[in-house]
Length: 125
Length: 285
Image (cartoon, rainbow over all chains, first blue to last red):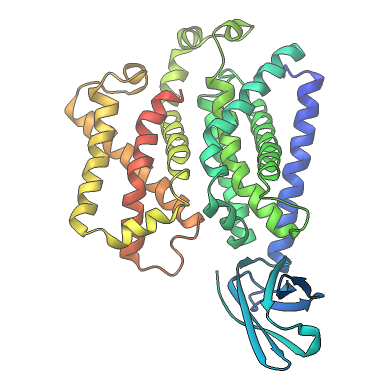
């Protein structure tokens, strides 16, 4: 068996690599152990509407707190003011623990009416 | 002890090789998505499989053929580390990994990209070097062969198989995650599938035995004997199919599919995989 020919620099690279590898595997094990098969638990947070031209855009934040990844998440937001208006948008992927933002546009100021939001549905990945 | 300058050059080659072989994957949407769709256990298996492949490649075709098993293991860890760093850097620069993402998403994306980068690093380190530094204290291929011909013969089969698997992974991994494989498999007729299988076999035989491909004479045992041609081609195709199936399984292409559909996908991806197991194998030596 030949003697190792490594210099200090290679040992440093090896040390850092070993640390990275251990950290990655450690995290994956932790992640795998804590992962549940339950459906995603999605929270909706509505922001403050912003006027853009004649329209009002309402920022909507979705967070997937626990459970699996949700794919093709459809969100519907309804404003009941002078008239009833409905807006919706899709988010392609909402992984576990992730937060995504979108906007819904309305003709009337959502602040003048009652706003309700819900997740209509999503696919299992 | 090697001078630091030489180590730096080796890492430099590794970085270049890692990026050359993984570039298509870094720029493929389906690969980013696979990063958070994949179950953590699956990612661990993926890391472990890559590590085994790296060990094999470094042992039989790596930059230091005379290396002890300890050194081979150390090199493999370094390559994985470089792969993780390079993968993370590239994904961050491309805006595919940002601070707003959750930890599991970031880790998933980086791990998926990093493993192919790591194989590229290994191949790059050993393949992209010039002749100049090969002479620095390490026996060249010819010398090693002359001093220990018997060991060379012994490692022949398993060594060639490992390198064939590496080549197949490098070629198949670039195609496997795309939707196109599923689409082709869904629409193709059984006769065409059979045609693809025969096409793969012919390609393998052509590259290994009938086109005087670079390195074919040295690394393909048996020569022009009909039986050995048949055996060699079948083994190469089997390696291609095995890698094809494993890579497809990893990217979740088998989840909830009927057996027939899985098989068709495997044969469809078997073409690039077999090309990797034959041509790739000879180029990676």
